[in-house]
Amino acid sequence: MKIPNEKRHFEKLLILLKEMRQQRGIRQVELAEQLSVPQSFVSKYESGERQLNILELRRICHVIGVPFDDFIQQLEEKLDETE
Image (tube, rainbow, N blue to C red; front, side, top):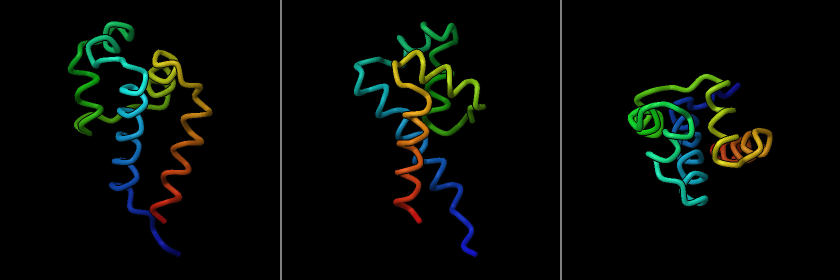
């Protein structure tokens, strides 16, 4: 059984989140304001310095206008590309 490369998977998650934010024309500072968190919160999770829990991820998706299940489906597709 092949063990997935978790670091690569985590990087794909971060890239997808950042791409979705940027595609919607939302800057880090704007997202942070809508989340009521410092801009550094967004910067740190996008750079991988901070990990998100599932509820934070769900909230970010909501704020950027992406249905959570759509995000998960897109993430699954990206992760399948690496296996």
